Length: 398
Image (cartoon, rainbow, N blue to C red; front, side, top):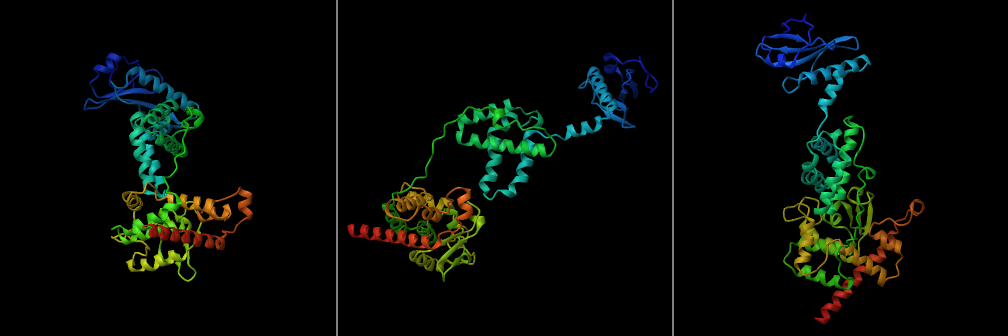
């Protein structure tokens, strides 16, 4: 039996490792520098004394019985091979210990990406969808050990429950691996389309519900006759008259509106295409702004909520639906576009510009830089006049 000295070079046995109690260092004698360290407390651990790049170092290799004598020998031999080749097994060990699980890496990725997402819903959805559909499958697996097969099975399972979310999950998983590659935790991204080879899913276009343009005036009248908060009613009509998106109207500020030129300039950060957009305001829109003056509360918002905050999109949508109209707020843009297409001779580029859409290819966009503002002003006045005339006809019929 080896003695508790550093001089012994006899090979250890599994039986001795199990029974050793006297404090000391018990060398294995295999030429790898491996020894069993028994402390005064009785605790045992594997230690390897090794020369790494000219310096003598000691490395912990775990403790018996979790790490057996055979496993400790195997690891010690591998460390010696790495050191002889000029590598640093100690640095490799530290790096391996620093590797995060997929779930931990996802949280780190989310923390870094969050400031780049303007929509709070996107920030929340990134983690919530991964927590629900991905973490149960391989959240606890070290990032570099997650395989394409793991991801594929999780995505296929998600498709069965939430097909509309499954596609986004692939992008979110990919973000995590891109972060891991940048941090040096993994060398490849197993979530690429080629690696996953997911079966193709036929997606049906889902259009926003919209009223026929002949019914829009009646909707405006019904909205105004309701008991809703004044700002809500004014915001809905203003949205319809300007063919704007909900967020653009709900967040509209007085300093964006030039009352002298009847122009509303929406800053780039609030536009979907990330470029400023000028909106010509028809006479009726200016009347709405005059009414909205009564609601000024110091917030700077043209259409503030009762609490002086930005109106929620749900507030506008809910009111329209509660009043019996099967339409989405965004659908009023469709109503306007269909009216322009069927009832006017305005060029397509003018109608598309009113919706802040790009038209033509990159070359055409590079040369055709006008926002056809004056033509749009005439068109929006025509739209307002059509709504007014339709409303008058409805009133006469009643």
